[in-house]
Length: 454
Image (cartoon, rainbow, N blue to C red; front, side):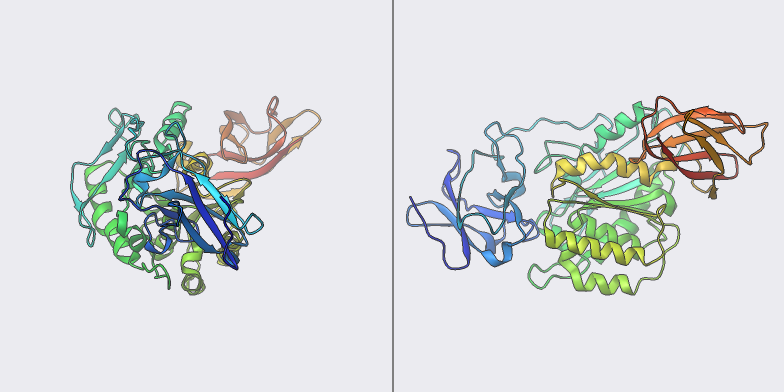
């Protein structure tokens, strides 16, 4: 059957639906163009005269491309592949045909997902109510594998959209695998933190995670949610678990609107949050308000920001990301306090955020992860490197002492960890060529430099 689009529009038509699609349900399109709202009335499909679900979108707004999926009004009922597995975000750009036909192979509805959370992930029994949400807020909790045997205290990461962090069964489109990643790092010898995953407020998610309203999508109740995290949840966690409560050991982390919120939280409460992980932030949602907020922000000392964005998330969104990155840089952040990464091929989805979690964690928590005191002052390292012999020599420190040497790659993974003596050559073979950070840790000072192995 042939269809012709209206002038300046593209028609999305669903040719085939799963047999278990309820007759009474409506199909919706959700994507980066509407804040990934799964059941927005403005993006509900309608049945055409042939009984097929379709929707017309203004093509002029799609020139830079969009990413999207179809739902039955909730992320628990998002489309899946024929085996019930997550699919990658669908994509469309203006150069594609004016009529695009789709086949939905299966819905998440009725599919039993397996529980993939590690044994050290728990759901807090304590009930947290967060108005205007009508239900108690679920808090998912990752404890380091050695928590019950050790007596030490741990940093804490407060992560948003907790349903998507640890468990395939609760995630709407794949999980971040935070627990699997931290368990792996622990097995490799790194120290790992406590992670507090805060479930989003479902229909109130946009309102809670946005500090400012959007003219079209509303929201703007982020200060209320921030107050809940800082004045209700964090005090409870610090009182009942062995935490390091100071800002250098407290991180806010999220993606999309959760990334926008984490950006706002650390600049609003630097006395509480000293670190922030910001993945695929929806800076576009509060474009003008955010720029005014950042312009009025003074330089914030002793905070670390790690933000990343995928090259396939949309040209306009990437432009906003780069503009905000430049504005952050002008607040006198240096390479050790601000890291902004564009990941080639990266998309607005949990699969990609899961892949980026490890390098982001190792950068944000580099000192803790390697068992180094956070408060050590940092000075430049004086060294020599003989590329012909592939030998590294530390200079200017007391020659009689053995000092710990760390060699860290561009993803902040430790590739060499040993004790060395000043003036004695350290063999760098068989480490592959590349750019590395090299550190010498002494009781009172951390010496750091950049090393290029040829």
